[in-house]
Image (tube, rainbow, N blue to C red; front, side):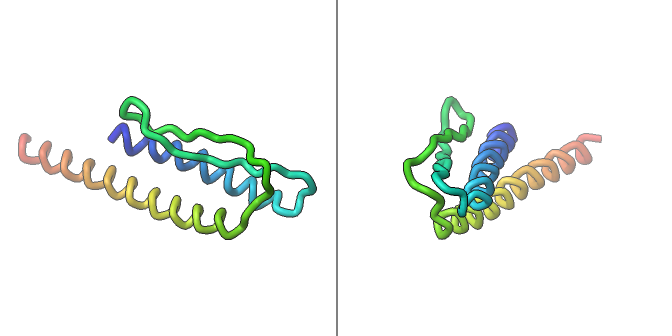
Length: 93
């Protein structure tokens, strides 16, 4: 469950950066923030860096769709783990 929660925090960071890029799409000389997610020591980490280019809306929107589905998948995994633990506790009691 820990890796799911750290993944969701990393994806939240990525989504915030993406939303900021989209909000500043018409800002002159704005450098978009690029985010990559990596696995380090059984923990999911978001690493951000400024790019030399502006915002690419097609990339940002597809990233946001991917992030939405990833949130759903991680939430489903956590929910299933909680249900299994609840069933186990019910059997034990």
